[in-house]
Length: 226
Image 1 (cartoon, rainbow, N blue to C red):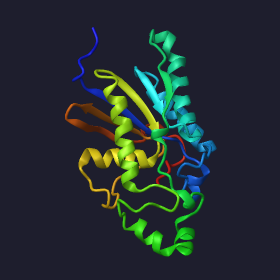
Image 2: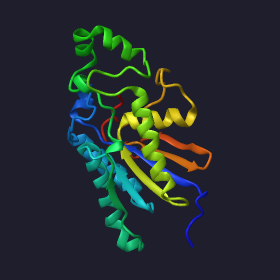
Image 3: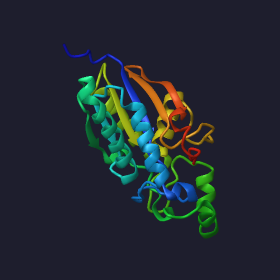
């Protein structure tokens, strides 16, 4: 018997592993940067942590850093699946799960942006929800597509568990949405690469179960925060 449409969905949310631009604090946005050596190790570590769980599906941004992190998770699940008589979940790519589009700012550091476009940089630092970065998106644009994408996938799997591998901006917006934090409020919560985060989705909305758990990364170098 299929689960009721009102049944809760568990949504495990993972930020991709580290990239060199993370380490250099360069804005990545939708530039397709690869995982660093540490990022690949982080992806394997979160994969091993999740490998004992049963997922109905794994969804990911199509950008390489998220796609490859998701691939490591699916590979780890597959390595245990036959022994545990579990089905390997499909990996589904979704462009709505991409990082915020930072337009002309991608590839630059905050200092470089401030020097080249101080007025626009100041508006962004003020977190004006409707300010669009030149050639890019606003915080509200990102919020709306993040909540739509994650909500759509959660509603498709009532009573099941899914994994979503995305980016810091997507996790930021879902956390704010869940807790009613205004888009213009400063971020006071962590966004670790390859950390374990988990939400429950019901008819009333999202509820947070776990956030920023990096126990599986303890044997690696420090997780990167941005």
